[in-house]
Length: 240
Figure 1 (cartoon, helix red, strand yellow):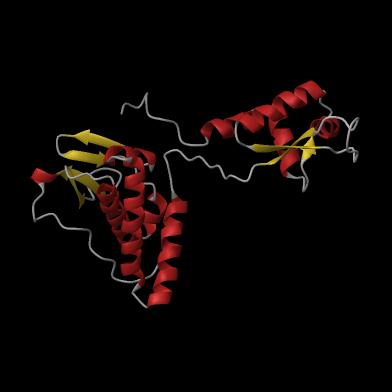
Figure 2 (cartoon, rainbow, N blue to C red; figure 1 turned 90 degrees about the horizontal axis):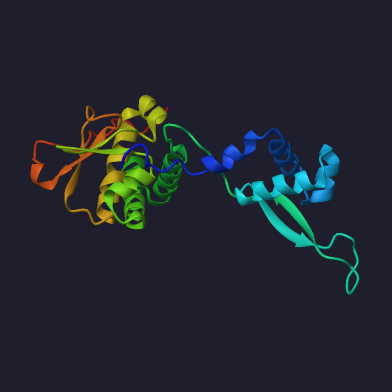
């Protein structure tokens, strides 16, 4: 996929909605309220016109930053009680954007799951981490449907060349700098699982620290040799 057609990171359009000062002020007002806030109350609190307030609140809702509910706030019921008011509260969904793409949340989930399973089973934590990473990779690959799409969706920036697929980005870059052996082993198992889950028989995942920004690459199956080994296992089960 060319850089011009590569999709923007998820959430960037929503976060860009906060670039407008009025919109950001409204978002902060809503986020700081324990109860949903109506248009009139928001307009009064910030000194905006009601029409301006309604416009910006709806833009924030369309961007997924606010959720909307309708409720009568007059306390009256039945005929003559008026229409329900449109109320806004901060959306429960989480948004984050990083360029280049980083997925430290995924690494944290894998490690937390591995530590929990290791504690319950007695299996060494790094062996459990390898198994958890492969299992998660299979789910990601199956969801994407093909290897390249799965790599793109998870921030690896795949780039095809004569020797297969080079990964131009490591979503776990900062962790890999401090715990290279642990993170590269995690990455290897994760991407082996991705290829398996995507049903990709045309490539083999191999460790290649010199391939690009990521310590793993995918090579055509017919180029795979026994000389290419998985990454060495970490010597100690510690994370710094």
